[in-house]
Amino acid sequence: GGVSTGEFTSMNFAFNRGRRLCAAYFLITGERYTPASQAVPLSGAAPWQLRSLFLLEQQRAAKLSDYATGTSGDPCLRELFRELEHAARLRAGRIRALLEQM
Image 1 (cartoon, rainbow, N blue to C red):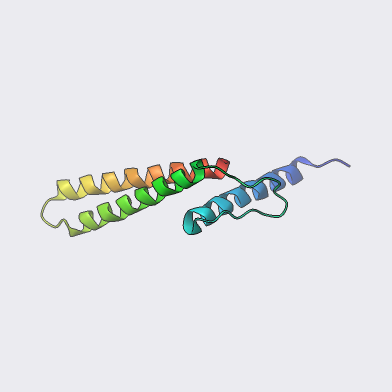
Image 2 (cartoon, rainbow, N blue to C red):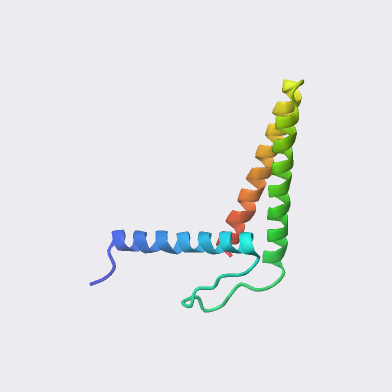
């Protein structure tokens, strides 16, 4: 008995979910979570630089959201703030996805 396609897909899904959770843990805490089954933990400056960029984009998105909420008189300006907020959230998501692949 080999591994069936369904079992392989399930294992692959679990592996990817684990990588995503490890990246989220790092982004939130600044500490690397390394399961016992993982041989070599991530090292170097790149993860820390990416985390700094991620936090910057999250802060930028939050400020832009506040600006959009506080803009009562001009709907065009409010829409611009919302678009910029969306772009910042997309950049943060790309950074998170990159960390998930490391």
